Image 1 (cartoon, rainbow over the protein chains, first blue to last red):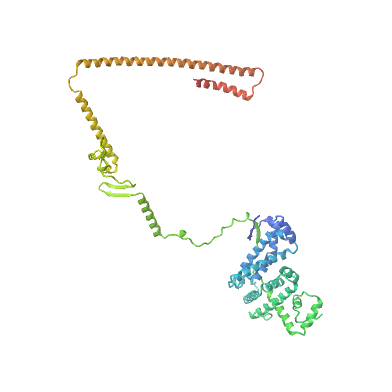
Image 2: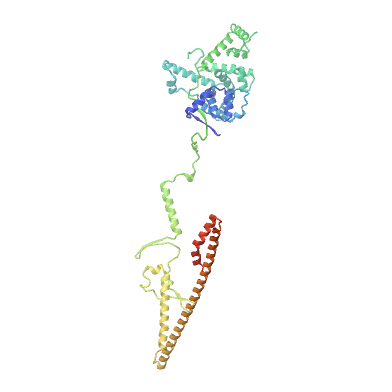
Length: 216
Length: 290
């Protein structure tokens, strides 16, 4: 089978019924079914892990479109490499590793061909879509400022520190899980976290988003 | 357990709440007495709070794995290549010039000649040059090595420009005239030889010879007719004999087949078909036997 990914591909009612059955299965069961030739099981895995993988990619590389490409490539590689997944680690960790490798490749390509890339900025459409009725416009703008400042501060981090911060802050992995994922000792993970938090604090203070000085 | 300012790993574990109660107690005791570490931990807390505000755009979802045959045929990628000079569009003037050049080249190759004069409009192609009439009409006279100029063609035999276009017509007309002259000369010489009074016995002898010749011819014709009749009779006799022989053979076969069926042995479909073929084909076979 030659797989491909179609964003937003229409699913029929029968697919919905199948998906309802698949929701109750664990990742490992879905992986087993996928390896048996059931694409819907893999689609369930995609549905389950698409947003976390996208969040990891977006926070690592800071570009929305590129993050989406990384997500697609991650699942494509995962599907092709299902035969090599032995179940020694969690499926999510395996996915994270693939994603981080792809993000690393992306960052290296950017270094080779340096292009001034600023994180995705404030978009009026974003503001209109995200501000609920109770939120004032100035609050929405302030939130966008925070988002932009954090994105810029994260870009100031070395790649290893950024990966450790993202995995710990946003994916709630344990120190050991991060160490396994990044392939480094436990103490190294903690050191990277400490250094990363220190850099972020300085960067946020420099950008005016002083921690604790501004309510967001 | 004690905690020192240089123990950053334990400090990080404390910040993330990933330490046991003893360690937590030791760190908190240190923070109460160390403003630098307390500030650091407070700053980290605020950084983490700020980080929690950073959410990626919610523009994701709906990714699905599909078989290639389920998806639409992929649109071929548009490949951008540097323009090639022979694929670049030509300006209109260049196209017209190229067309003229092509036509002129073709006309030169075909040796096209277009002429308009008192004889009319003439379009001619080919490499053969029109030969002057005097040269065209040159014919070799018997007994001479050099061609001699024939008399100029008459307007009736070679009309106008046709003479220039068709030299063979001039030659043909000249040859015709020559033959006519020779024939006329021979006829005149014969008449001259036979001129004068003819003797009477010569005329009488000619009449006798003619009657004898007619008699002999009639006899030959009668003889031939007789031979043809004999031949015809022989052929008819032979055909009749063949007919009788074939008829006897067919009757014998038919009788044999009928006898076989009457002996109580039912005929197979193949035998029945053969019998019908014999009956049906007999006239044909008899006609073909000649």
